[in-house]
Length: 361
Ligand code: DP6
Image 1 (cartoon, rainbow, N blue to C red):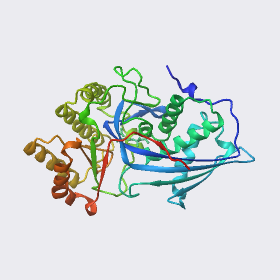
Image 2 (image 1 turned 90 degrees about the horizontal axis):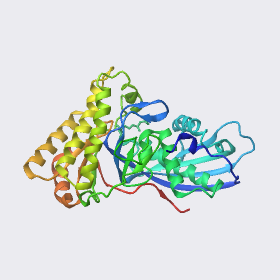
Image 3 (image 1 turned 90 degrees about the vertical axis):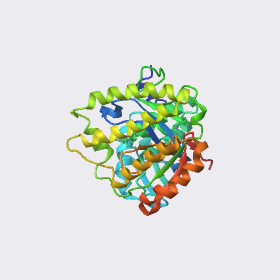
Image 4 (image 1 turned 120 degrees about the vertical axis):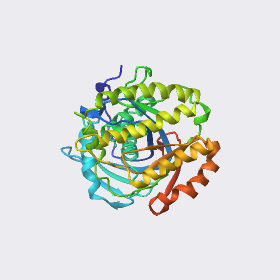
């Protein structure tokens, strides 16, 4: 079994300069990660669809420096210095230093941008931490060209997890499992793994239209929310339920049963928010328009038998999931019925994608 020690890099060459660039997508969890232990170990396994269009693109310029006492980096967001992102990166470097002891030998310029609007309420921590981790692994590969591809991606996911848990699911594969699950032998608490079984064709090009209900700053961050699962009255039942739901979903992803898919996905979304509403302090991230949209989706599904469903992140936005062959009808429904509930009528069309990509310089 792979352990944390396996990710500590040892003998290394050194380089004077280097430049790398990767894009990493966002992902949408189907079985949710909510609750964690020390060192970003998840309290339960989760599984997600990797997205295709919502991405972070990050360029990392590296130059060797004289001293190696501190981390040294500049951060640019859309080409301009962005001081308020720096503490998160500093913390990330501190967390991964043990595994990447070469970091203090270099000065970094991190130049990052998102394909989705900054204030859309779409979390950029998953795609952002994934893209930075891919670049760090490109540096590591330059220092140690013997690294295998498997190790490269596994360690990228391992590092991304230390930046933000869900980021480890944005590295490789269109469906990704993170967290040990008894029926998925390759699964690990330390990194995400591509869903190891054949995905039923119903899920090929599965669509995710993200309805932007509220762009405002969240009142409660995910990190605080995870923390509230300690001493939560329903925590242990919830963690068990995630295992059961992942077992059921594993079958569904293979057999293509969309009715079952819908039940699991919507129940997971509402359970996530139920955990928020029943923590102490309690909080609500859904907005009135979130509920309006959910009710309209249910009505539309009942009337048409079109297999669309919703899921939610830790926020008010609604992800509408549906197979590609009903796209036309669903988009018409979204435009006629749901767009009015979005802030400034904004929504983003996305679909299942394959993970991080190297951008040739
Ligand atoms: C609701 O990965 O953002 O989106 O590990 O503290 O950075 P940290 O949390 P984060 O939590 C995501 C929670 C979620 C569910 C999910 O993506 O599984």
